[in-house]
Length: 75
Image (cartoon, rainbow, N blue to C red):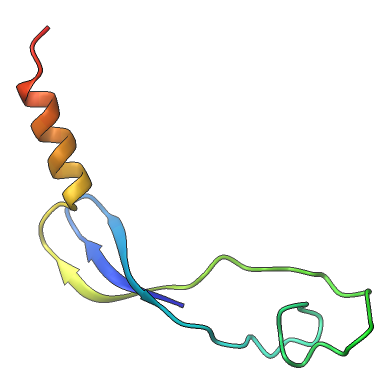
């Protein structure tokens, strides 16, 4: 699980911290419920869950910098 800030203007997510949570599926290789010694599992690894713990009405720093660089460059 990735906790972070969601920028509502540009719809980007910036990670702030991460933590693990077991999916508890026996067919998942990364779960503690996966039986030892079996290879008939999916060996799946789902993408992490994005958990917005902060909502920001502004654009993310990357978008702000791109806009600044774009407006300062001359053709």
